[in-house]
Image (tube, rainbow, N blue to C red; front, side, top):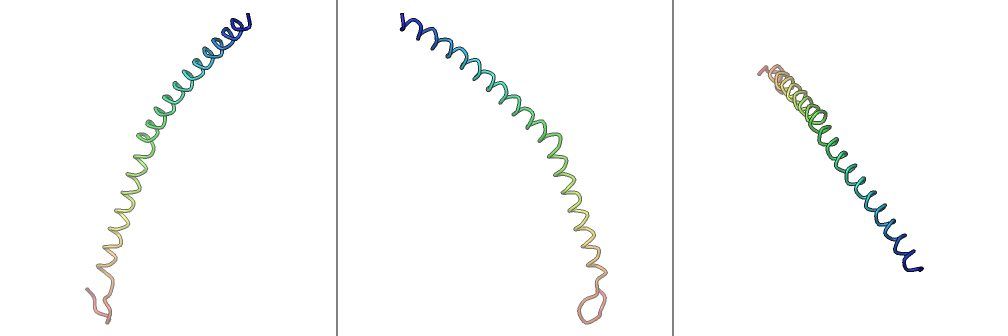
Length: 76
């Protein structure tokens, strides 16, 4: 009788655990999808903007060097 009772409890625990694991797996897939979406929609454009700003800054520095005087007081 105790063996039957233990079997029923263990089977119930197994079903509950399997259900929880299924929920965890679904949640993990959702989080993975959300992070991929965030990467595509937020991070990539920010990287592009940062690269553009850096390029503009380098261009401004280059133009500034064109007009900067050399040592000895002579223009370029």
